[in-house]
Amino acid sequence: MNGDASYSIGDLARHAGVTVKAVRFYSDRGLLPPAERSPAGHRRYRHEALARIELIRTLRELGLDLRTVRQVLDRELPLHRVAATHAAALEVQIRTLRLRQALLTAAAERTATLEEMETMHRLARLSERERRELIEDFLAAVLPDGPQFRGVATSLTPELPEQCTEVQLRAWVELAELAQQPDFRAVLRGLAERQAARQAAGAVPVPDPVARVLRRVRPALAAGLAPEAPGAAPVAATVAAELRAAGVDPAELAQAHDPRLARYLDLLAVVNGWPAPEDPGPALAWATTALRAHGA
Image (cartoon, rainbow, N blue to C red; front, top):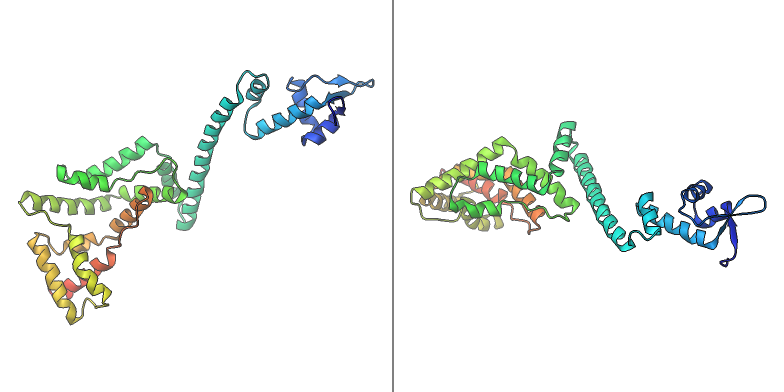
């Protein structure tokens, strides 16, 4: 139709893809150009009204309220500024939806109880400052004071990106749950305190017990050597001798083999976007069994 043509309220609604009630609503609030009247008193709208109502519909679908729509139509607000504001608001909504999706997915996979769901929801909603405080509390609980543990603290600190993925968010929630477990904290504290005691006694800094065991045990694992087999005795003796020379009680391997520690490191890598760490579990289990079997 050309600009001189006119529409009945029904025709306008049909062409614009809205209801007659919506056309009347927008018209009565002055959002459409004034309607003319037919000889019978019915409203007639020009083509400009169709263009205006299509714009209103677009703005409403983008989430603008009627007050903002009026300001845009009356040129009281520049459209680019309104678009920027609402784009930011949509980003918040998207993060919220991503959070809900991550929580529901995690709850479904774990068959979580109501109490666990509440905990997960609380952890996922923490602000950046609250997340940082939670991890700082955890690290203060498991690491003794001293400059030698500053690097360790940094390497154990998760940094959830602002634009995180669902996988990263779920990993953060599980990691935060682990970090609050008192018995897990006690295990890590015990390992760190023994390391601090060795250093205080003047022991020469050496790789941590896990690194030493991995280096010695990897070839035996790769060869498929059973830890109870006679051929494993020399490996067990070497591991025991190296650990004792470094002032490490071989019994510490049982604590280092705590699967929660390996899980924490796996989750940490996911949250921080690091490569997946090597799982020390098989090597530690092999060494623990070999030491016990061969009396090393």
